[in-house]
Image (cartoon, rainbow, N blue to C red):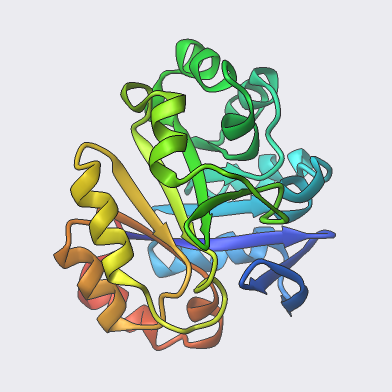
Length: 240
């Protein structure tokens, strides 16, 4: 299993939201490039970057920062506000390794299939953020009437390889992972690379996720506010 350190961007700053609430955010005084440099020094092989502005309303897609970030030599997984196949292609041109799509994949009947046809499923990550059992979109501001299963079946499970699953209730709260939630999804969809996000607090969460078969996990606030977790990640070889 490998850990992907999270960098969430809002108004140009690195922030972490609590339970997806834009009014409850922690701001960190480090630039995106400096953060990537820090995670590279630790030894992480991939960094997870999200534009919260983009996820919410499709603005601030931060294309200008990627030349400097990609030069650091770490693989980047980016999402937030991607609304077209052309935008996906642009991020690949900038050197991004994997692109995340959530809102538009859920709301459009054809978008995901078109993206997979053009780029292949290996470099695309479907984001399904779950709130009270249903998929939330538009930066978690809108809750749809689709469950995880309904959304992925409609999109086409054969077209999906990676799924980023955020448990919104746990995100940014340092409250611990709901392992049962992810275990149920892995048992129902064993062929997917299920990437949990939201709630990791320390060694126990990471070890329990590894035990149930998780191959990648996004960790955010714990890395910024509980730096001792880095020792756990190194000791257990979660750097990737």
